[in-house]
Image (cartoon, rainbow, N blue to C red; front, side, top):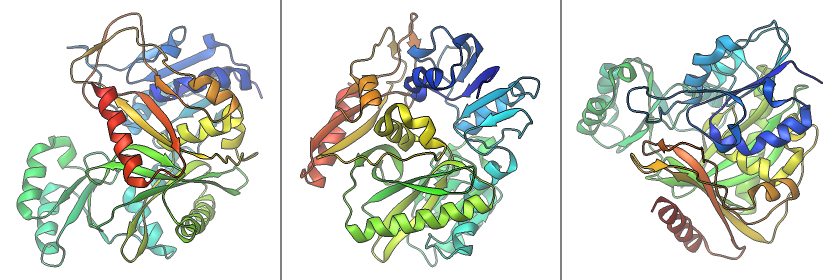
Length: 402
């Protein structure tokens, strides 16, 4: 299939996929519009719209739905267009436009965390008890009542990026402090408060729903979290027994079947936590996400066909991978950072070890802390125990940050 143009509504974490995308669909670079929240080295010759704070040149951190809202008007029916976006949420369903992920109200609803809570309850999947509030005033009232029954609670946004502005609280005072730290436009949006489930491990099940409704199981990774919920990377294969992995797979297939009945197609994952009384489904990411990068690397150049459900590549290795984010230091200028790895060779030919930056422009660039500027990865012996793997992961994070 040929297209007049392709519109990428992504940030730079997917830059390394672009050469294979061009080859697969035979789309010249002059027809690619690449929208992102900060620079990436693969974009050098693309028509690029970069979103930044004009006052100081710092990166503006944008959630996927923010990018979609800003550039949805670039997607029109007058050209045969292929859209590649983190999520279909807030993107219009337009004739003559093809997307790898379902767009329109379907995608917007499915990525809402309150919709997901009701969805899990309806299909009988264990999930933390959750309540919805319309603003911070209702949140305070609800928390005061819930602390009579629960020792700790979790607050999060209902919109697409569930991990954004998430916090564990143990008292009404904690909730007040949390509210005082947030911006006004955030405080007047829908907020969710959940029972906190103590846990030591978190997992992500990965799947694809093809356009004909078939759900394909892709595997699972263990999530490496900071302070219990901030996602910083993954370990693969996960430290989990066969029964736990079967539980995740069964839930993924059940979720995929029901999502397809709602009209969703494309890549998705489900986040889990291992409580003392079993596995809890926490949220659905009906979008491209960090595990998509991992899966793309495993599948190599066949990634795009796999995303569409045409084939699945089973990957078996005798090592254990730790894959983490490289984050910028506050206010530091990054100039001419180059690829320090064989990531593209790994992507092309299969599993390999790597360390990589995905940024590097001709001009200095100033980043706010938290900007995701690249990846680091390392393979360990498969029999490495979990404590050692986690220690090596955090050592890797500190090394890259310094």
